[in-house]
Image 1 (cartoon, rainbow, N blue to C red):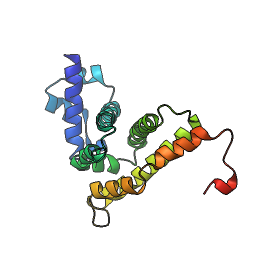
Image 2 (tube, rainbow, N blue to C red):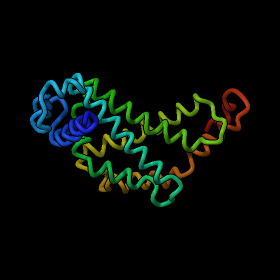
Image 3 (cartoon, helix red, strand yellow):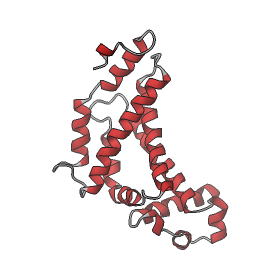
Length: 200
């Protein structure tokens, strides 16, 4: 029962966040729609921002599940994740509009890190890769996709006349294998940094 109530709170929060910024959602909004008391809400969560953290973590885990299911399926890999993002554009836009709030920004960055750390770990399986190299590759992926997502949210769902799916599929084509190649270089490097002449 307790887990059902927690899930109901998360679902209602997601529905509300699809129509307004996080800072406009109140505990009363959630309790009214869930049909629960304030005491029940506070039994599970301290405040709206704790619900936000749980919701973002749940969404990140869902994205990772899609990634795991699609691993090794050329042509399908990434498409379901992109379509999930497109289907939840209003929610993402409202979270983004709340991003002036440090709590919201930290939650979104944390979700991005979880997803791309998982991707890098998956691609580097069986390789002896330096932890620092994994970290920097994850960060590059995060910044790239976050930049694209920000433009997508600011430009009414299109990027230079293309959908998010079209842009990310194009990006995937252009950089296909680049992460694996970078990880392989890390694994084969004997020690220290590559000579400066080989950095570019």
